[in-house]
Image (cartoon, rainbow over all chains, first blue to last red; front, side, top):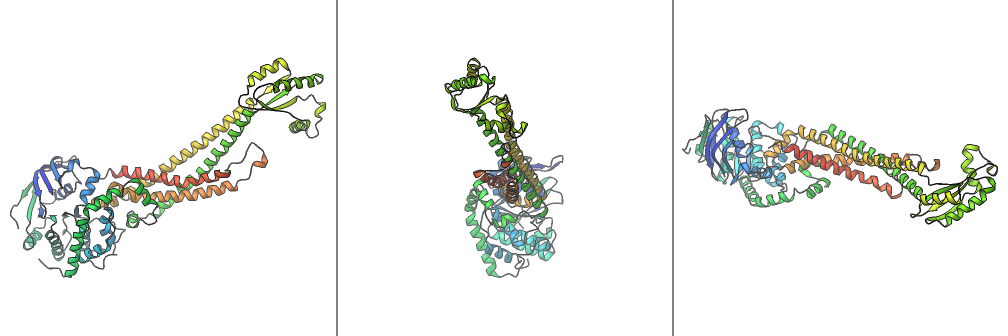
Amino acid sequence: MIEMRDVAFAYPRGGALFQGLTLSLPRGSFHFLTGPSGAGKTTFLRMCIADLLPTAGKLTLFGQDAATMGRDAIAGLRRRVGLVHQDTQFLDHLPVAENIALPMMVAGEPIDMGAIRDLLAWVQMTGQARSMPPALSGGERQRAALARAVILSPDVILADEPTGNLDWDMSLRLLQLLVELNRSGKTVLVATHDLNLIRAAKQQVSARVLRIAGGRLQTAGAEL
Amino acid sequence: MTGTPRKPSARSAAADRLRAAARRAPRIAKADLKALDVPTLWRGLIGRQAGLADRIVPRTGNSARLTVFAAAVMAFLAVFALALALATGRLADRWAEGLAQTVTVRVSAPADEMEAQTAAVTEALRTTPGVAEIRPLPSDEVEKLLEPWFGPDVPVDALPVPRLIEVHTTRDFDAAGLRLRLQGEAPGAVLDDHTQWRQPLVSAASRLRLLGWLSLALIGAAGAAIVTLAAQAALAANGQVIRVMRLIGARDLTIAQAFVRRLTRRAALGAAIGTALGMLAILALPDMQPAGDFLTGLGFTGWGWLLPLLIPPLGALVGFAATRAAALRMLREVR
């Protein structure tokens, strides 16, 4: 689904962030992406939604070369990828339910309130449909972001430090939701520097760990 | 791993929903493409309720009011520019028509030769191609013409006033040929085809008409510029909205549509208000007809009253095009 071959990336007027990245994320896989702060985990995820393009090498997303994708094709790609952003970006003037419904509207789908209610129940936020995003706690925001990410049943779920601001219990709850999605056939990639979270996933799912360090991607290889 | 206390039915229902959504995926792509062509976009604009799409952009009261106000002012001015263009057009047409279809022959001769000269001129006119009607001006009409200078009860017969003959002509009338002929047959007769005084007026009226249309075009351009600025300000103030929408897979047109709908409606509302006020103001202008033929009144006549009604839809169209162009241009800067 996502393939990189000898991919390098450098920000303008900055040194090379990483180079020689080669990997493949097959359908239904579960990966953790780790590495120290500033190693490029978020940049890596942004490349996975064609928000950034590699400065060298080849990036293939759902069989298409990212370098040749037009803006509409990129938009289409993002509808197949559910992103749980580090900052859980919402439209703060819309209630939670409408934020979750946005991908449906964007895709030209009728708003399915039943699906939204089910998803809110799934992320244990029944009763929060009308809450405004600024009124939510960190954990609620992350879970609402996850609900929005999966409303269109995307093929891939990308989560960028989803538990960064959460206590341990809430982190585990979110992890379980991601595991459930993986069990339903979704490809999941979670960027985190929380090794405890990775260890906690050990009992739940067969996952691989990718580590970015020193500008290189190291594949831990062993399944957890 | 800690289990989460949830109802199995909710989980199962959620999974069912996800699977159903996955089955719908090909239709989503098709519907999306279909929904983004310009006519559909336009239908979306005039639709009564666009639902969630209408609320993506947060409402900003002040800028909304300013956009409506600016559009109203532009429409108000456009009504007057249109009235000016139409009125000067009527004036120029009438003067040009008069110029082309009437001439005057002035016969100046000693009293004892006046009748003979007049008869010679009349005879020459009768046999001149392009002359449709000859009408010697009776004394009372000449008296009326002289009244502004000599006062009432002018003794026309006692004054050496030239005899005037009004001639109605057709398109094949040759003024230069008649002038030459009169020089030979009635040396005291002078042909006045009114060119000297009417031509500059016709020219001035034509230029005023051009100015009116030019003003309309400039008002339209200024309106487009104002809406473009409003759109750019709205887009700049809603960077977060654009970023979020792009992240969840919104196409440029989908995002632009939210801004376009909002601003087009404001432009249309403002233009409707301005047009209504402008038409009322034109209606309230004093009727110039009794004051004389020169100013026939700045305003509309007959079907002309329907023309200003085109201003609101045109205003909406300008708002639509300007916002759409500004939005798409700006959105291309966001990946």
